[in-house]
Image (cartoon, rainbow, N blue to C red):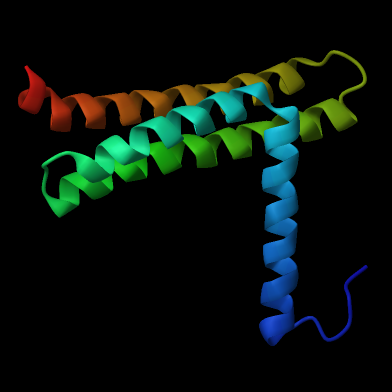
Amino acid sequence: MKPENNHGIKRIIRATGFSMQGLKAAFKSEAAFRQELALAFLMLPVAMLVDVSTVERLMLILGLFLVLIVELLNSAVEAVVDRFGGEIHPLSGQAKDIASAAVFLSLVFCGICWIAILGPLFL
């Protein structure tokens, strides 16, 4: 049910609260999200300290955030499929596989960015 008077700053505050609940739930229940978050915390200082242009720095950081965002979406797809998928169905498996492929592609994108930008500095 939609709450009354859910507009303006009140809506923003409520939406932020729901977002924080989602992040907590993902951290608590998703090992892959915890691993990728730990990796992002390790790599973010590197992105901030390395001597690259602002655009390159943003690309490094974007890659890290993209992986986390796609992992959250993957977790959401898996939760919905598990909630409604009591029986084994090919479409349930397909949905999970496609979401997993999106995570894989985001990891590949992140890796390519980091190698392309930092590779010439260290090789």
